[in-house]
Length: 63
Image 1 (cartoon, rainbow, N blue to C red):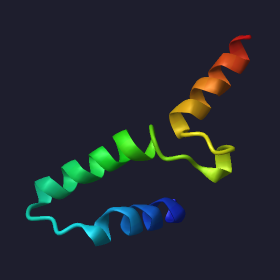
Image 2: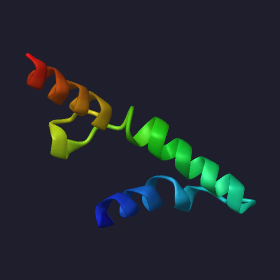
Image 3: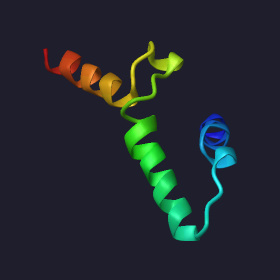
């Protein structure tokens, strides 16, 4: 969890100047749901995105 929050801060928060709390919430949501989970590869899961890794895990269990 600490690693995730470090990544969130270094990849998003320090580069932004949020005008409102709502803007911050929306940008954090987009970062997590669109970028972090669907586009950003993770070395700890063999350089897959979390969505790809989960889909691969499910398909291996079904097969």
